[in-house]
Figure 1 (spheres, rainbow, N blue to C red):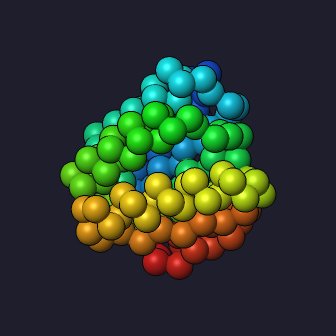
Figure 2 (cartoon, rainbow, N blue to C red):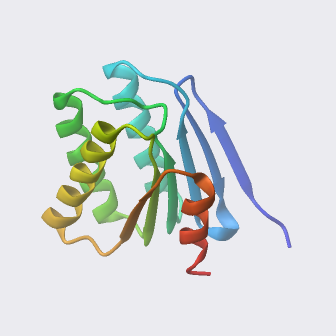
Length: 138
């Protein structure tokens, strides 16, 4: 079996696309400023829309807390991308920071509720737990 893997990295986000598994991993590498955050979010959405992605693993442990304007902006961007995508499951790895956890969960619930999007999402503190949940569908 040939496994097609595409890996890309910009200064703030690392992507790994495993096309045979319709899987995308996006890992934030550091705390971005507003412009970098918007660029990173745009690139994540672009990867989802230009490839057949069903399973997404997003590691936001180094992301920190985007400002409110960036949260509102990215919620709209993600809603539109996921509405047009084939995503079935999103696993998010978060830091132990309760404020980050609350912010990310709120954004996710708002996104799914507004568009009634048919994907499952869960939140985890470790990559192994997130992967176990994602792979549960195979």
